[in-house]
Length: 64
Image 1: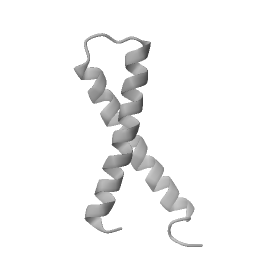
Image 2: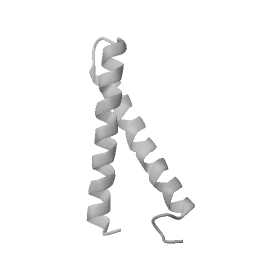
Image 3: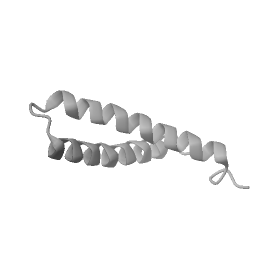
């Protein structure tokens, strides 16, 4: 089993993505003035994209 497909590596990656998503989603909620369904959907989507980019950027810098 390679390092990329090891269960521990997958759990670490998912945990990192969830951590970034949670932080970015909370930041989005702090900055908006009205909280309705559309704002939550847009915020969750933007946070997901940001989490993927943050993980990719961290991996590029640490050469993993």
